[in-house]
Image (tube, rainbow, N blue to C red):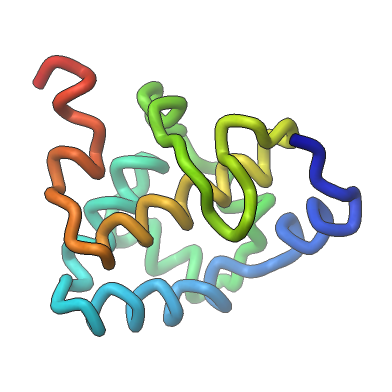
Length: 125
């Protein structure tokens, strides 16, 4: 699926700090925790709590955020529709990575079991 260049540029320039409070509010509203949110972010990016805090404090863009990330090799297992886009069909790598994160947060907020969110069953764990 092709996203527009404008859409991709908007994602790239968006700061992690600007969306993080929305992620946190979304999961806490559904009785999930900040710790679980960080676990999901860490699984996808390889970031620990300190690195997540630095990304927020330094107001890094998604472009920088994902450039610094060590994307989980199982991230390609994240599939489905988020924000009107089928993730597996998105062609722009950065936009796809941002939608991976959106999808994981969405699954957490919907009460999905953590082992399924982190794709551990598919990886044989």
